[in-house]
Image 1 (cartoon, helix red, strand yellow):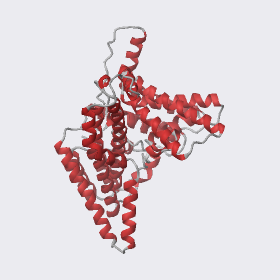
Image 2 (cartoon, rainbow, N blue to C red):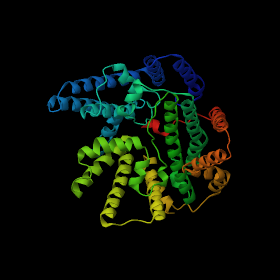
Image 3 (spheres, rainbow, N blue to C red):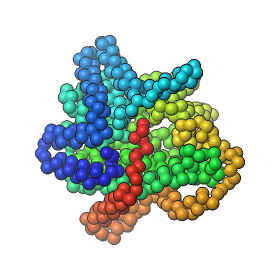
Length: 475
């Protein structure tokens, strides 16, 4: 079950909201939320739920043990290290066993007998949530939660369980025990959810279809130059629209019941540097690696050589977190190289003009998504050659030209959707109508009508096409 499925939209979510708002008291509401979250997660398999419950138990007990000892007691640190080691070991077994065995076999030319283990749903996301919880208790940023089921609620809450954002316990702690969701907050959440659903079903899914149409993963060698550029552009649009749509829906679901999750995207394609891009893209993951890896390693308060080692560690891990394949590691190292370059520019006082800085950043990100998309290095190489006309397939073809002409207005809409144009337009209209003394209830009604229209269109898209999973489900 995913947020963009008919069963979630017309059965699971309405039933949950009805029961949740019917019961009184935060304890009962939390029990309803926990039950709904476990049912939601169980949809992917009961055995995965058992693993999630066991991992949560390790985090719960580890945090309680850490809190038992004084800050100077070494046993406190040992419990923290042991808990994190268990989390990383489990993640490594499920996500990277086949990768490392396959790499080992390739190096020593051994017959490959490694089979990929089925990846439990959301394991990369809830593992990092549990790591942040245990480490924050160790750093005394929060107190250990005494009730196991409350930690389980934090870990499994269905808003975040499959694709994040990686919300820390400290960011949810207060609202886990005291929150309110009035009518205005509920409507804000519903509108945000509807926008995310529309972004996914109307824009992201069709961008994915176009990406595969222009630049098929299985036949890169025969694609002309225009097809490679258009396919890469569509993938660039798809991955942002798809993942930010999930985050919009998660934040909207939280708002409906009184949670205020931090934003996970801030128009990353408007960034003026690679560093700025990563402050805007998947913010919860970037901040996790900053706070729990980069800063503990020494951050930037060290020699230039040590700084580069710290950055390399962070970006190799960032790449590997995204998938058990060398192309993701290469993708992480690719960004590491540009961050080193930008650090050099900073030391030398070099600053690009704003327009050139945006073009440079977009170019870096555009080429980076090619590393990300192709796990097969042969296909990746042919895609890069194709960008510069070195694959011998010419500039264009009748198929590429026809597909582009049929979708040119859609592509313009998709490009505008990755900018704040629609947000500014909405704010302008609201400001204008208020200046004309239009009743606020009318404005809210118009917003609700717009959200309802998006839900209707999204439903039609879901009913009329095959199921398209969220891209980040695989991570």
